[in-house]
Image (cartoon, rainbow, N blue to C red; front, side, top):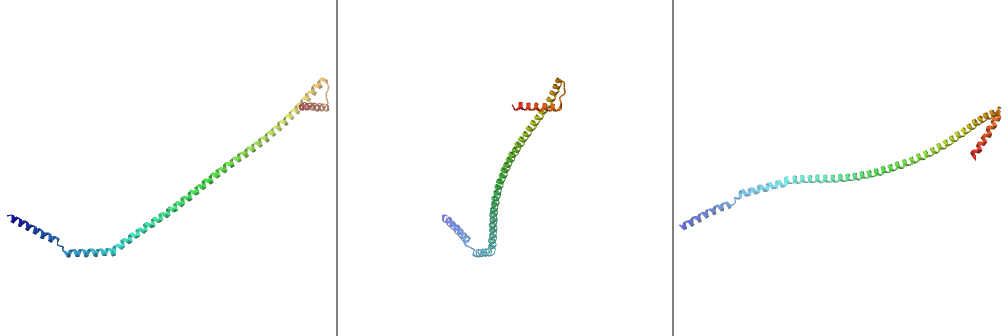
Length: 186
């Protein structure tokens, strides 16, 4: 029985080996057909489609490079414009500061000139006022002397009981004025 089992096992192994050999045996016709179809498709794709893909990729690369170059040029232009703007701004600030300094200097000189004019005008007004006061003082003194003379003549006339003539009166006025003038100078 053992032999029978061994024989049966050997037969089973042999059947399995045959099945395995059939599975392992290639069917060359479908494999060759698949290989020919694959190579034909690859050749068609390589000749017809691949150049279109590489052309599209090259065009896209060129567009990207052109866009980068334009962006670099725009950036350089923007930097140049910014530098020019900053230079103009600095120039404008300098000019504004100069204008402010000039305006301050002009205002200061105008103020000093106005002050000098006011001082000159005040001195002139003071001199005129002093002259007017002196003139009014002299006129008042002269009038006072004349009144004093008339009064003194009237008193003297009453004392003497006689009337003094106009020429006598004039002589008395002049003498009195001379005496007052001497008293002032002394």
